[in-house]
Image (cartoon, rainbow, N blue to C red; front, side, top):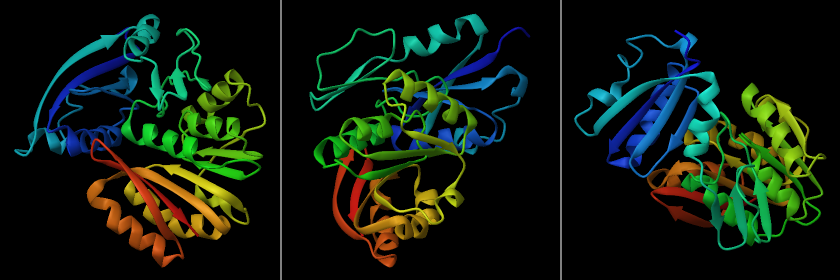
Amino acid sequence: MDAQYVGYTFTVSPLVPGVEILIAQLAQVGFESFVESEEGVAAYIQSADWQEDILHNIQILASTEFSISFTQEHIKQTNWNAVWESNFNPIVVDDRCMVRAPFHEASSCEYDLVIEPKMSFGTGHHATTHMMIQHILENDWRDKKVLDMGCGTSVLAILAKKRGAAAVDAIDIDSWCYENSLENIKRNNCPDINVEMGDVDLLAGRQYDSIIANINRNILIAQMSSYASCLRENGELYLSGFLEQDLEQIKLECNKHGGRFVQHKQREGWIAAKFVF
């Protein structure tokens, strides 16, 4: 087979939480890129990792609670950029921040961010990234030391830096996200953002004024004690990647470690919350 990737386009109903569950289960069998849409999600896996029965153990496909259909295609390497470009339109958040790809025209927005997502998460299209951008636009980052944990494309780290952060660390466990973040910080003239590949173990002994973490509920809960120990007094913690029904559990976990709930945003069933420690 001469295709580098195999792509599936899924139509999912109901979208929430169907798409989130589907992405999680596809990631477990090797799918490494996802582009969400108003109908569902497109998912991509390297052809070397693909097999005919790749979807056999995807439990949600057999669930009676969701209606899911899909189409499949083999994508040649030379066509990959065209595939993601066709799915990536620029977005504007609160008329202040545009997130666009290099092939889009520059905007007159206060913050014009150029992100080439490739396989990484974080273009602003997902509700969680959109709300985290809003939090960054609405809050003061001047002279602060900031951590973007699970940075993906580093779009949030880049915006925090452009909003005046004195120092920014961007950390992701995924090697593709690490490489993509290095490209994006250079593309946005933020070379002093410190990008690292690793997990929460890197945080030992560090101190931050603000932490951004757009990951998922289970990881956020598991890492909450590490976030709390890294935050200076009155430090701010911005969390997203979880659904409305998970907010109370996130609040309880933050409270357990000394965090105080301040506010949250809600978009398409997803939550982005602010806490102070």
